[in-house]
Amino acid sequence: MNKKILLIVLVISINSFSQNSKFSIELSYPILISEKGNDLDFIDFNGIVDLGVKYNLTENKKINFGVGINTTLLKFKVDDSFTKFTRNHYIFQPKVFGKIKLIENGKLDFITGLGYAFDFNSTENGKGKTYSGINFNAGIRYLFTEKLFLHLQYDYIMYNKSELVYYNENLSFIKIGIGIKI
Image (cartoon, rainbow, N blue to C red; front, top):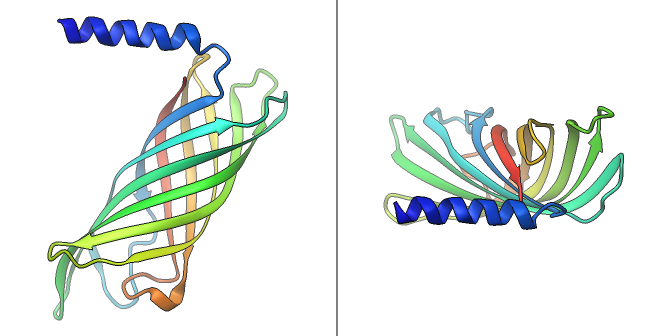
């Protein structure tokens, strides 16, 4: 009971002091588009969760700019005649973004970003590598209330091909989620 009261007080405090806050937090489900590696079939190639934080640097009526970071957890299994393993990917995506209001009432925004992705991965035996590459994303955000929003975003990561073994040259996924301005 005390935990529920503490949570309610925290939410009320955040809402009362954050009327002009430039921060937002997003929670998404990543849906992978590129599910085939070089010549290996990935089975059970799943997005687990994506968490993002954004900070608006400008406050204009039509166009805004900001910085953000997303962290994504992905998991896939490879099972073919030569190899069998499960790999976890922890992707960190720092970026700069631009946001354009599409409708006068400000409820629908187009957001695009450019950044760099760091992909830390590990397998069951503890072996892993770190991949990196340029990240581009684009999406829309719809405000349900003054603070709560729904977003849909496409991410495209172009990895450095010289390091890759199991991926093609890129990784593509869509993120569907909710967010809150704090």
